Structures are given as C-alpha cells and as structure tokens.
Image 1 (cartoon, rainbow, N blue to C red):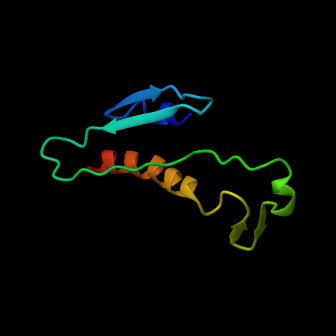
Image 2 (image 1 turned 90 degrees about the horizontal axis):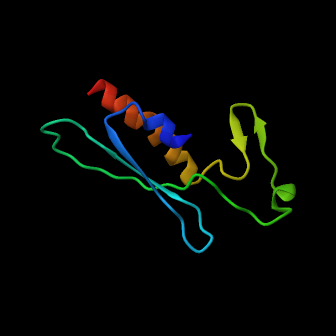
Amino acid sequence: MVADGYRDLPATIERVAGRSGCGDHLVVRFFMGPGAARKSSFSAISITVHPMGFIDGLPFKVEGDSAFGPGIYDMKGGAYLAYHCVPAALRDG
C-alpha cells in the first residue's frame, strides 16, 4: 500500500527482502528537481508488534478531539506525515 502511494511520483521504489524472519524494507528515493539544494531522509516503521494480550490493558479510545492507545505517538505518526507531505511538496514544488 505504501509503495502504491508513491508510484505516480518522480521516485524510485525498492523493496529489500527481510532476513532472519524480519519484515521487508521499502526504500523510496525522490527526485526533487534540478537544482534542488537540500537533501533529507526519513526512516519509519509501519507496524508495532505487542505481546499477546497487551492491548487488553491499553485499548484504543477517542475522547473529544484526542485519541489514545498503542501507536498514537510513535514512528508511525512520522511515517504518516511523510507519506502525505512528501507527495504534496513534490506537487507544489
């Protein structure tokens, strides 16, 4: 799903197979245009694996304008922002 979200952008997408039972990695390199002075990178994880039964003690909930629970404030938040901000930056120059 993540790779599909980047397919129509000026980017190369490489899937690196995981080893020793670990998941795959996705490497996406963007072409920011001629004369682009800055380079940046980000690294993120898109899953969190908790021990069985963990969620029972820390369920997801929404109270007013706030959400609480596992995965709310971790690297997935940054991955989500990058997934939407990088394409917008490329479109907007």
